Image (cartoon, rainbow, N blue to C red):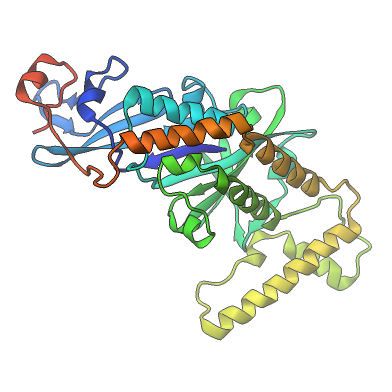
Length: 349
């Protein structure tokens, strides 16, 4: 389901946030000069980071970033299954305990994907990656693991070994799409723009189709296919096709030249896929993984009838209780007295 999110303008009562025993918002100050080194204050709670960002004199906003999946696990990990009902429990907790207005909190980034268990090492898939939409995968690193991704203006396709990241005994693959521009959803007919929309069950089938079709478009190699014994043209296509640079479209091409090259590579891709299928000596593990992604998405996005009723009734309740006509953009700083008596109060200016 959904995992990482980013909300640049969280609709929340920051005074309430500051009073809560769940958070501390330290201020970074130079011990020698008492100079404030960073006016942005952050506090992380169960995998979600809340940032208080000064905007104007006397005004600041709250940004939210982190993993809804980790939040459901106390901030520890996101390697298990995160179901639609688990997502509801997280949103319910954010509304009930932190009083977040989920209708006014607009999403800027959101990740959706699945963790699937494979009958073979994840490295088999990662080593076979060639391109997605003519773009090579790049290897990146974070503090725990490495992952492969293809980045575009509106979204990023990510695939990596979740089992290795958390030291699991199983071969666990993570496949996800990170939406970095919400136009991505608009162009694909998906109505998701706020935290509340994450609970719109009617959107889940569309997201599943996007995830599966994206995986199908990835070009994988099949190392069981050998160049020996192939016809000259087949051998040439095999050797060239295994090089990610062969599939890249030159940025210098424009207009008709670009379109001709795009069509040529599209034909070459169809021929390359057929070549691998014809001469493969291994099981069709790409289809196997595709089926596993489909099955897992259906499993984690399915909602029981009673739960559907509960989710819909809660959304109506929240919409009725939360102000949605005028969403607050900036919050004024705390009163002087409260700031002086509260060690986590804001002394920003």
